[in-house]
Length: 123
Image 1: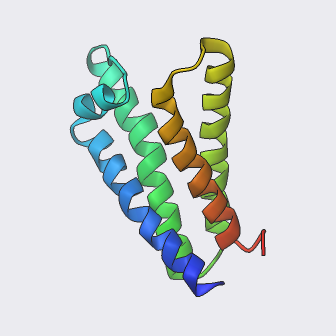
Image 2: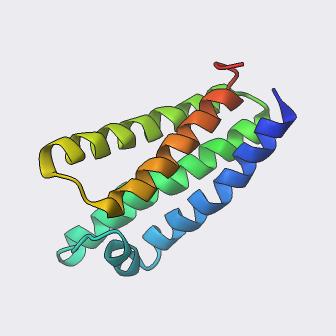
């Protein structure tokens, strides 16, 4: 495994973990930050489980991949990011364009690309 890509992957785990924790612990603030309006306990639960789970889970998978030096864990993160990218692209096509969705889309594409490269799929 390329050491530079392993370091970059490890560094990417930090903001993903931070965003995941932000979604898990004060979900209302994260919901506001991404334009969600959670409706009561079920809505807050969704922010915690889906958004927090995706982000914190991705960070955990990266850490496992770095510690175990098993690049397949990076592919798992790439798949998760790929599905998020697909969701954003469908939203852009169906719901219309809003410039606020571009930065997270670019970040997700970047994370997926780094994970694919770190897994050694692209040399």
